[in-house]
Amino acid sequence: MWNNEANFGRMTDWAGDGWQWFMGFHGFWILLFLAVLIFAAVALIRDYRRDDFEKTTIDRLADRYASGDIDRDEYLRTKRDMSDGKPVT
Image 1 (cartoon, rainbow, N blue to C red):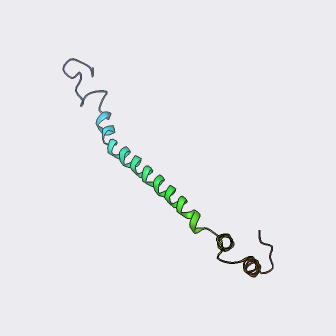
Image 2 (cartoon, rainbow, N blue to C red):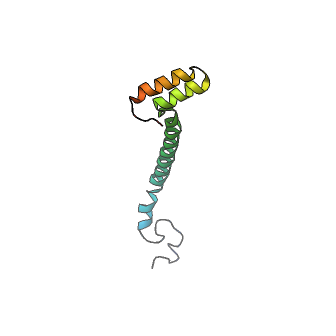
Image 3 (tube, one colour):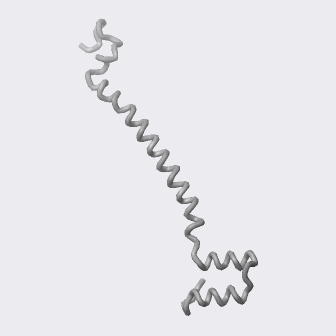
């Protein structure tokens, strides 16, 4: 019997022989948890930085017009030239 007085409370015989095998996975779970945290942090940073890099040329042109770098006529002419006759929203 596994819980006799001679062996009761000893880690090596507690709940059978599978306990030592399971203890080896504690380091694995910690590494897996850290990998998930690092992956989430990198994904959030990339998503945050992507907003600035994915602006279209029309968006950049609109930003220049809004900041006063170019006037209305230049904005409309450049927007028309960039669209090549296609409707631009």
